[in-house]
Image 1: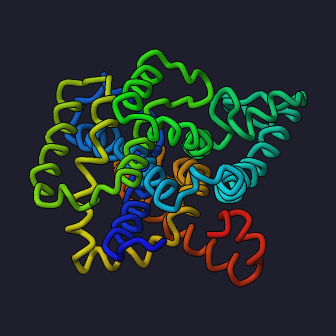
Image 2 (image 1 turned 30 degrees about the vertical axis):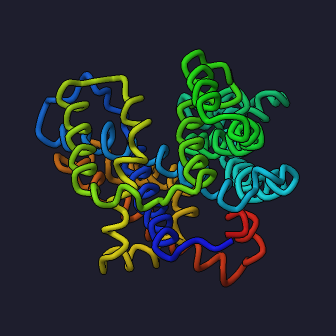
Length: 338
């Protein structure tokens, strides 16, 4: 089954823009929303970190739900398991392993006093499985908790399909109950992803035209920006409303972007989006220690905030090219054959 060129371009743009935004969202150090307001830059940073790019995960998850159901993977559980294990689970393992090994050595020889999220030394199977796959908490490469939850919701798609075949209202009621009472427990740590995934899935299952809201694109995008400003100005900690609405508010404007010269340029960079996501955590941390910390100068952090994400993208592109030339098989495994 083919996807319209316009929809395919929107998906490509969503991937590179949203993942670039995730890099910005993860730039250290963490600034609690309650502490925003010391200067104008803190508001700008919060606007993107607590507003705009909090839409990244919901939008990408909705796209995944759409593709799983558009290509009928939910109807083929064995194929679904095989494909998602190759494209999500294996890269999750391979990108976590080097960092887990480094943490193990650092903890064994007391090489760092950094408070790592995982205690990998002394070795226990439970701690290592958690660190590599995020069974109970986030994996050692913390942004990859998105992949961990995405794998879980993808595997739940046959169950979602069963509900959709019965009744739409029943499906919505079940999803609402699972979300509200957290009935999925630790299976999906960020359980709002289940709602985003189901949103994309239902668009595909009911053959809803993804362009249906395009005529309201600018109005919805303006509403999204206003929502983000509201969250920051009033320091609203609960961002669940933004997560739920983000796919509807963002998707139509991607159509405008896809029809522009900038959109065509972004599509060409989309193939680097996955390696950017997988590699960015250690890169931005190293850059932070090299020139982002306050002791490096008065404007060091501003320079870091403005350049770390573009530098991460450049490094990801170089890694992609080097791996393509010297180890294409390894690149295929680490990028899920993308």
